[in-house]
Length: 418
Figure: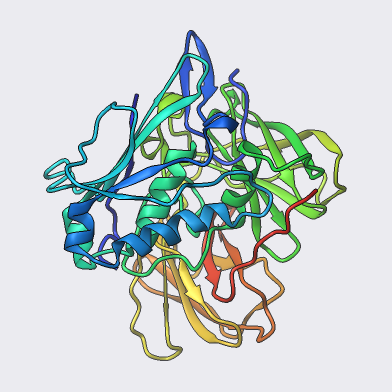
């Protein structure tokens, strides 16, 4: 077993088969196996330690809402029994799934929560325990997102390199308004409700030394939304299942920060961080239809880069008050806002960025500071809730911050297929 953790970061106070998104995948009997619950395990029963409710009376309803974020995914077949509040719950393998309180969890490592899964040699989860550090009940982070994140681990998801994802390994005071597209597609692929007719994208990411292990491949739609992702296997191969019909461009990026392979679990931690430029797949845009498989998609990612965007921030235009963090910026329809992107390898007068969404419009020239570049954007008033990518260029180098922007609004729920 391996604990799955939310790790602290800059925003704390603010082969093997290839699988969609990042699955919790472990080497079992010499074979990499993604872990998940069997269908017969649902509805899952998860009990709550009374100490949590005593310390924060609204915690019971917060937990219920966190569960509901996952059960509301229309394409997914999973459910939870109403959680009971129990005295004296203890973490550990005892046949009971639990959410308990842990004071000073992993002292001096600053973890906010940890989920431990137990599973058999076939990768079937038999039990999962969530431990929450007592300090989180003081309001230092968004508790609902924290619990929803841990429930994602309980269901078999690893951390995500998409900043706007609930499974992103850092959490701040303000949580995401809903699950992101990438994780709703992933959870519906693990626990499908009936037959699914979405498309499958398959291919390979190759660099100077051949296939690249644990590169993040992103399916970007015409709205500039990172709809679905996958990690490449040891040969650089990837498969993205559950892609809705539409037109996409595929790109690959390295896990070189703000999320890297050390934020992941299981087999992914065996990958070495390899620097390569963010590149789009050969052949340009791809029109996909439901029920079809599109293969032989190749991303040529030769070369190395110094450019590495790590932070993003927003401010009122003209205020000069810029704060950067490894956290997605939440924006609203109709807003005019100054966006700043920073990181390694930024060069004044040379580094620029674009938002490949038709709903974002740059209004100003780029301005430069010591390690970041900024510009003012307007956002269409009729844009629907969506995550967006920031693509950064500096000379011949290119890089991405996937899901660096999130347009707030009513959560979108995909209708279940019959």
